[in-house]
Length: 92
Image (cartoon, rainbow, N blue to C red; front, side, top):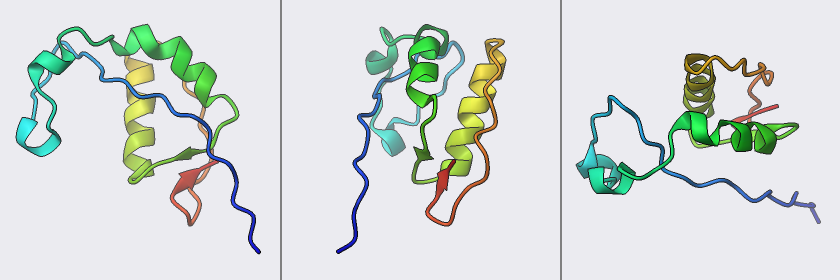
């Protein structure tokens, strides 16, 4: 029997951007849903703590990792390279 690792709890939050074009038909996200959402800078510390020593696994991990790296850079925070992507679509 193969052991399956336990998944960690995730963080789920919409992010408010100053220049943001919503694609509501594609995402289902409306302007009203993001009007009072935190900015990336406001969730930065929590996100960094959560990602510390974590394996980032996502549907399109290269896109998500690039997005995170650029958002951290935009607010002046260095986001460490987490390594190479594995065959399973994760970055370690």
